[in-house]
Structures are given as structure tokens and as C-alpha cells.
Amino acid sequence: MGLFSNLFNLFGGGAKKVEEVNDANAQALKQFFKENLPSEFVNSAKYAISITQGDKGYEARINMDMGADGSTYDGFAKENFAELADWESERVFDLLPEPPVTVTVIFDMDFGGKNKITVDKGRALAK
Image (cartoon, rainbow, N blue to C red; front, side, top):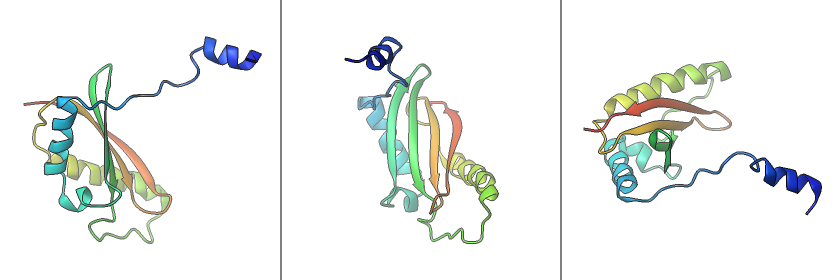
């Protein structure tokens, strides 16, 4: 091994890879989002959900195809997508009832092309 690989290993090797969890709570969260998010998002080929566990408990990262409901975003300026993502994520987040497990909800919102915005909605508290 060379000097740089030794230093790399010595100092932690960069960012930690977060492992997806697949326990009963993670499965319950996946089912919860599948049942409670609007069907056009869940049924999209771009829909994906990853459940991880960190210092503050479970985290759900949900990839949502924002054009799945037939919306088009042609003509939107790049600077308008952050505001649109905030508004859309609030609308979707407000539809959700209390989850079975407290979870931090993060939406990766794909508006098409290179217009992808991540919105951290914070924690949704369990029943």
C-alpha cells in the first residue's frame, strides 16, 4: 500500500457509507409511505425509498417523479425550482398521517432534466 492509501485509511477513508436497514420498523415505514403518498408518485418507475438509521433514528429518503401526475415544468426558471420543491413537498408531507415509527423525511424531488431538488421535511412523529 502506498502512503496516500495508508493516510486515507488512517483518517477514516472519507464519508461514512450509510447502510440501509430492513428490520420490521423499516418495512412498516416503506409500507406506510406506499399506502399514504399519492399513487401517481408511488406507481412511477422513478419512485424509490431508502430507510436508514442514524443518530436521530430512522430516516426515509424518497425519490419522487414530480412529472408523474402529468405536470410539466417547461418554462420554469432554474431559480424557481427550490421554491416549487418546498411548496410541493409541504403539500405532500401534509397529506401523511402519523407514521408507525418516528422518522425523518427527505424528499428527492425530480422535476425532469437536471432539475432535482432535495427537501428535508424534518421529523414526522409516530402515533
